[in-house]
Image (tube, rainbow, N blue to C red):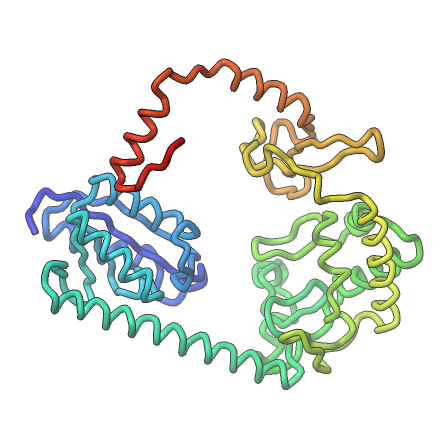
Length: 391
């Protein structure tokens, strides 16, 4: 490997919590930077935080995808990782991408092993074996996790994140509160969750309000917010919105059961609501859902869904039908006011799709294709080695 080359440094963790376990992206990048400096390379960093390497779709790893694009564009002479499983745990992805590297003349280095020469059959075999071991380890790890979750559920213990209304003695918002929370680290890890004295009444309030007043999700969110309740997220407490309310109202765990693989298992955690109340709420939700299906949603095609961003906060705008009957119109609006943690200068802006479509049509109408556009397209396709049919 010659000095003065440009090498990409790829680092990844599948869970942000690994930053606390000595497996952080920063630790990987530090080792890679020292290696690049010793070789005299110019480096480009590609850190993927909280991205699984078990998926085959590389587009779901944005930095990995950017690294591939740079390699294909000839911007990289090679790619370096600390371990082969940081690159990919899927054998087909490992072999496919490294095979493409070989065709592009891009080198590959795993600090745990050594550099690889794709022209040598022995190195290709070694890469295949290492990739197979990475996938085998990932398979075994997944099986162990599933077995552990199944065992925990069979004991009546909660599986997954802790719902609003319960406490396990290790809540994020209780860890840093002042004065210190009296429940902090008082519940053993292998014991069922306990009721959160401040949040549990909010769950009962939401269910009873929905059943008694037949209120909407937005109205219940307003009721909870006015009563001082705040939804619990990994990033702290936030105001309730209709989506978090809907998630709470369909959570059967509040009746004292544990759901695992579609089965109800009697839980050891205390129930906040009765099964009768839960069933009544679900019946109301199904009735409302059947009324909503009277409108044929199959023909509600939003032309700009996933494309528009709010000019105030640059977040993707949500597509939604505003109004009913003959007054219904498809619109797009900013959702920052529902998140309550995102600053936006225009949080209530609504855009009518009809007006956007007219503006888009006006822009498109100004395009003029050259007379030889078919010939140009065929030449571009043929240049990529794709057979061309008559256009």
